[in-house]
Length: 265
Image (cartoon, rainbow, N blue to C red; front, side, top):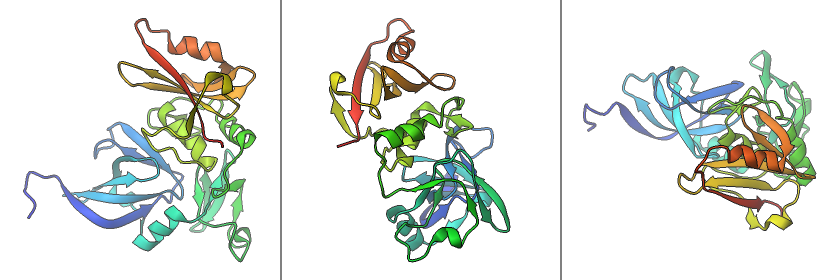
């Protein structure tokens, strides 16, 4: 029996799906708490605890590895077999800056990274059966270097927002995993993707990482070619490599380690 000092009850085999444009995930079960991350339409999650007053659920987003709290009224529960199917089967992922879908009798606007759980292998054309405007790509087909850069540069001028995962606000530590996810690759929190490449072998689409050796804090950039990189300060921007490097080194006493990684064979 649960002790009274516990404020939450564990749950098993409870799963949900985001059915709104953006679902905020909070660090604590209160609306004035910090934002941990955001889920986009069609992303699924596991419910791991419920508060004693049943006003908040703690959820885990397996794709990114982030967990936090949502208000109970925003839970959209799905069966466990649907959850497993959505995680493993192909789906369409929104690539246009703004898309729209007919949902419950009205238009719902979708942002890049939103998911429509239809496969290109379906026996029918899913576009003929739902009202959708915008561009998508099949997640099962991984983007090449040019396609990844095209996805990434759509986020230019998106402002910085802690915990943000949309064109209206991006957290640097979540922006780049989101870009790679849209391109068909996996990048969970704390687990860098791909393989190390030597500095002289870096090609457009490769990720560059600066790590503070004493704190393990990281900064990211995507190499675009011609000595240009896509990176974030107070907004997502393009500059030459040296400007990004000097910006990261602007605090005296930092010990930085630079490495480059490629997700491409």
